[in-house]
Amino acid sequence: MTTLKEALQLDKSQLQELRTELKKKIEEKKDLNAYVGFEEIGDGVPVAIKDNIQVKNWSVTSASEILQGYLAPYNATVIEKMLAAGLSPFGRTNMDEFAMGSTTESSFYGKTLNPANTSRVPGGSSGGSAAAVAGGIAIAALGSDTGGSIRQPAAYCGVVGMKPTYGRVSRYGLAAYASSLDQIGPITQNVEDAAILYDIISGSDEKDSTNAQRDDKVSEKLDPTRKLTIGIIPSHLEEADSDIQKAYDKTIEALQRAGHTIKEVSLLDAKYDISAYYITATAEAATNLGRYDGIRYGNRAEASNLNELYINTRSGGFGDEVKRRILLGNFVLSSGYYDAYYVKAQKVRHLIKDEYAKVFEEVDLILSPVAPTVAPKFGELATPMQMYLSDMYTISVNLAGLPALSLPVMKNDAGLPVGLQLIAKPYDEQTLFDGSLSLEQELIN
Ligand code: GLN
Image 1: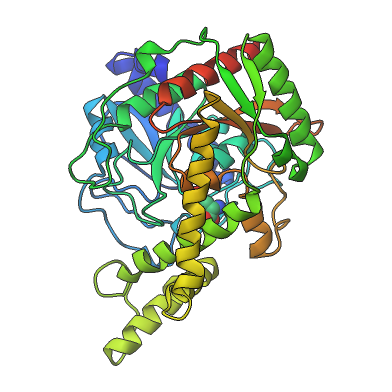
Image 2 (image 1 turned 120 degrees about the vertical axis):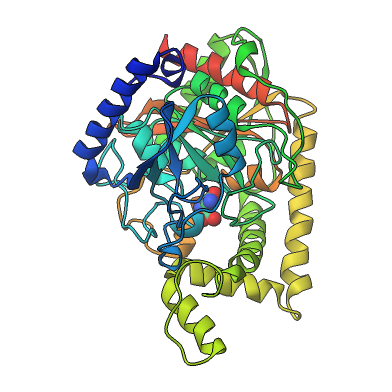
């Protein structure tokens, strides 16, 4: 498949050819269900867009029944930035409903298959975007990452996924899941493409009050020859299965071969991450999803009075996972439990951030698993709790607002991709991409 870097060099007629060829392939690989609809605008370099990012006049539904029929009234800032750089939104990718999930099974449009093995989940929530890139039916795609939703599907499908520092990329036009954690980011075929797409979508935006208003770019300055100190966290590996442990060891060797210094570090037990995340994320989600009331957006159920209208619209429009999280979020915010759960989670969140800051006084990057296993089979994560636990390695990065990049490092004996992530300090995307590129080159050679 043509890379993003290559596609940016093509002239108009070559691009037209590429777009036609892509459309044909998308049709041929319809069974993957990576796309939930096909719309396109412009004639630039085609990039697939997750179904929670607004593209003016396109349907945008967050893969939910409640938003069927809703058309985006404006472009998200990332879309404006893409258009200005000669990139064009090309197709809508599948996702877990409202980005809540780790498998893309909770989509209103049905599950997406993992191109590496179609009996396996592609990960989530940006499973459609990762499957499209891995399946050769997208050059690159946008996803969103609240607790791992870019990095984990990238790891399960064998592609590169990058979550920027919180505030680097404008959230204007992204359907909010948990506003203090959400970031849009690239899913691509390689590290350099991720840097290019990250450069295009990141930067200042007055329309997002949490935007960092920083415009420094990385892709022109990529330097894989820098020698870095990379932290490893052996205590965290105990909960990972043998494929992941093997990949971790091999990656440490590759980093050493590339001339980096490895240093053992420790972080809080990941079980605290899961508790703090699922309290914070559900609290914010319950609040954010209050707007889907049947009055302002999308679907409206039949009812004889206002109260009934809210109840019928929300009961019929949201899927089970979304309802579970709204209930949990309202519970942890309720007056009797606010201090015991929500406030405590915020304290733990601070602790996690401080821990990372301490570790980053000693190292440039941290190497971590993305998930405790390779992509599970459909239905394997039988309970919501099992699914939440599988997020143990990704969510602390969001709680601390850090940038991280997941890249494929190995295949297991069954041919399933294993991805690991590098994590950097806030706003140090340059080091994140430099180190990732160095690792990618070492693994290819
Ligand atoms: N799996 C996590 C969750 O369900 C993360 C999702 C995401 O990053 N959007 O909340």
